[in-house]
Length: 108
Image 1: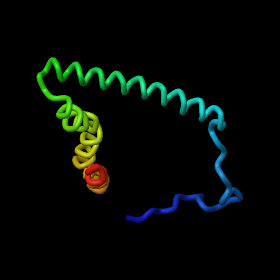
Image 2: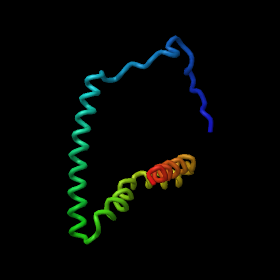
Image 3: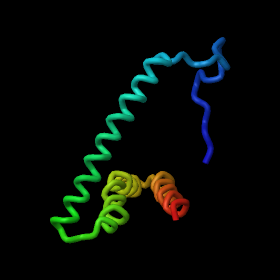
């Protein structure tokens, strides 16, 4: 795989200049803190839902949280890999599959 330089890139007076930040430090810090609290609340909701589903479906919490939740959570990733394979973008599809396999191997 190789990358081709786009026209106009590498030319001009801004070569090597740093990009300007979109938001400031304190704004970024506030967004990070706010999203951390939001994700923590959502995580608590997911845990409560898994415990309720375990009771109502008669499945163990371990099965739901170790097997079923990761499969459902990565459904968009798997669907994307399949769509890219249908569009003959096998390098992207293979990259998604290898990345997912690498994550699982590192976890194990």
